[in-house]
Image 1 (tube, rainbow, N blue to C red):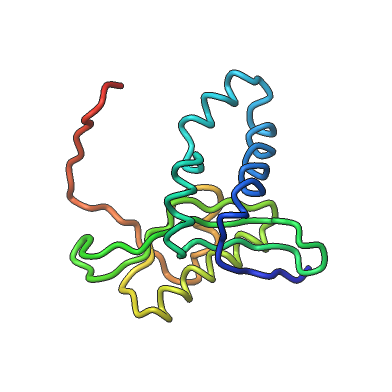
Image 2: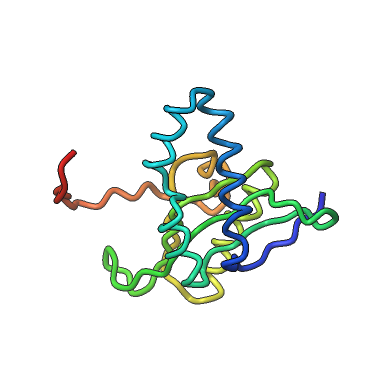
Length: 151
């Protein structure tokens, strides 16, 4: 299968939400559990709107059908962990391993093309398998975090 990758546009939001809702239905048959999982997800509408507007997020579609098979949301970060410029990949979603691998490779190549020092990938959803050829290192900053909200 041949894939076509491009920058996510605002018009793609509903297709992304539909993909994520299908994934949630597979993982959480119970509607209440599914709703709670959606609230705690990285693909909430406000998050997607933030990332899409920045222009660093990409989707993959099947070349022949135009069907959405994956996407990632990302943003550039300045002066993080001693690096001048980095790409933060917040979330990668896919329906095929090919889409996952191609999207991860795209993020890596984007970082190289734009002369960024690092690309930070999430360590879930099979992403570590996709980036192992790029010699990833576990990021373990010596940083403390404190919650500023209840919970």
